[in-house]
Image 1 (cartoon, helix red, strand yellow):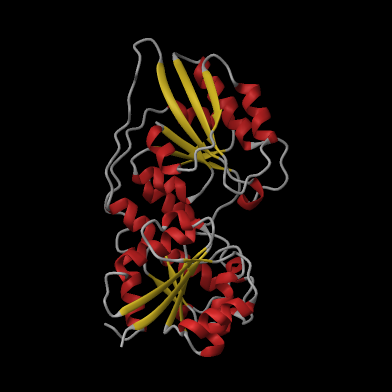
Image 2: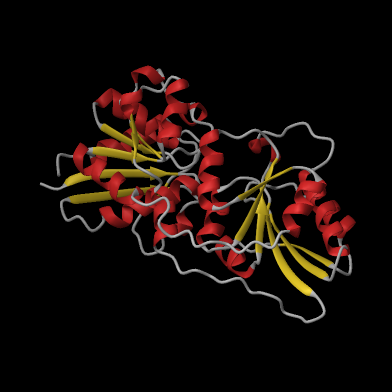
Length: 350
């Protein structure tokens, strides 16, 4: 009899991690998959059969889904809404196995905000990226035996099944043209709530200084985060710093990978897209706007992401370095295999 696997995710980061595992699970004939995706993640599911689910749902909706499908196991990510957690809450009450795939190195406790059980009593098995993440979560009260170091499925996919995109190089004998993609994010979710100067202003001051220091011309593409609805401050900064040597465009392009491929340098804060840039062998600069966990800085260092302090001199010096990006194939390896093996083990299929 085929084992029934219910999969649900809402947040794009979690969706990418889970979908990387779905690609393997769908090949296993002993499994029957039922997939639910939130609005921001469904764009990654081209070619798959799935149902839509809102980020915030009533528990009754989750109950109806479980009553109809009767899963042997529930696989979720860690979105910002309550939908995934409703499935986990019901799993512990109904004695259904639950596997959670963590997708980033922060906000561990917040991801269980809607849990109706204490962390120490959870039955969820949590797939985490590395030993340092496991240690950090254990210190926060997550039960150690529930934390399984699998690696990151999505990073495994993009770093080890990739085509290296070479740097575009110089396009003029008089000027050195560079196209920079700046990945913006809401500062509040980055841990920066009170500030006198916007981090983009600091970056632009360094970029202006660098452009004026030699024969440099830049096109700066600013890609707002999907949740950034108020762009007044970004627009004002763009108008302030646009010069003959710096063209600034606020992009409406939804395909971040396309923007990364077209860029010479990718800059921003800390996001999964920074890792996507390195997987495409792009020089990538992360501005340190708030304290981050050791696990995240370690992962960024392994990926070759350059971390710059948030001041004009540090960013200028970073831009002034001529760095040849090293190929990153082989790092973050094993995430897909290890996570798939854990799921099959929980289902007694290996």
